[in-house]
Image (tube, rainbow, N blue to C red; front, side):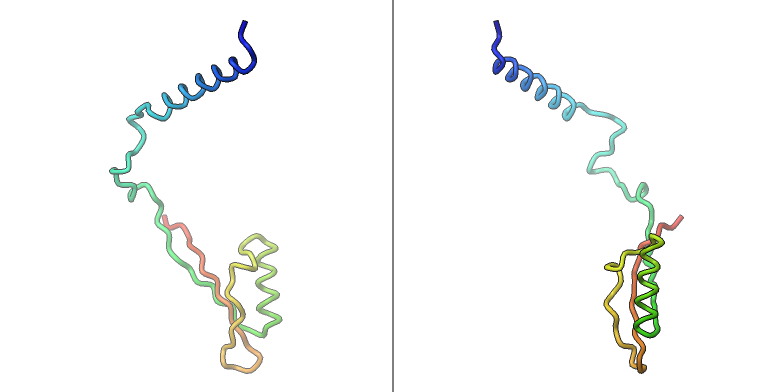
Length: 99
């Protein structure tokens, strides 16, 4: 009669053997490292969003864009002075899919 520990060891060996077979089987449809993936990757381009206004307006807009799910507050740059009195700016750079 087989003990619990022997059954466990046998099951582990069987599972490892099946995993090795899966990992080492060759699929002709699977791209290899040497194949170029450039044609399969979508092209992305940066888009820069720039908010300029009083600190309260810029902060409020950033929070509204988070509420609607467009960008997290942490995705925006810190508020930066523009050189005009009571005016700041913040920038968000997003990568968009080009078709």
